[in-house]
Image (cartoon, rainbow, N blue to C red):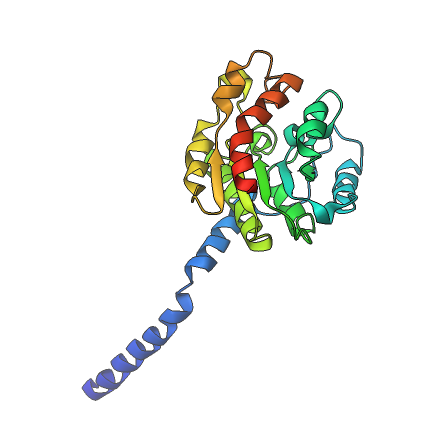
Length: 250
């Protein structure tokens, strides 16, 4: 009996040791798993159509893919309705035409998008074939609080995932990451998200810039409690961003 125990015990130990490597995962795999479990970082088409005509979101995505001269783009703007209105009447059109059309800019903003929806678009061609791209401007996250109801920590993970996708797909471009704009006219400055994403700034490819104070101090810049901005707001946005953007364009 003693001899049997002496034989079986080492055998069991060997089996357990052999099984340990199968339980290990790399740091990259662990990050991937955490993002899959985080809704804000899981790519998804936008199903939220309460305020949009049926099929509008898909059409807007397809319009971006077929934008005339998109391969010539040197700047892209990634975001939600706040970004979407950059080149819209009643929004930032005048500033856009003056400042960003000459710089060969492409608007990748879509109304009602959260981080997971922007991620889906980046995975489905919107940043493919952009050989001349120099800067990607990212400002998104407001709808993650107001529509998809994601936690601040998850929103930060979603924004980090967007930056990761840009680094992967357009490694030749710089990323100008803006702090999430204020909600409720400054009652929520999204500090809980911005304090986290500010750490993504590496001084090499990702550059973080928070212009919330500038927007709040500019009379008439904030349009509503959601965080949309007026024409004055787009002017203020452009002025606050210009020095950093010019530096990155070089």
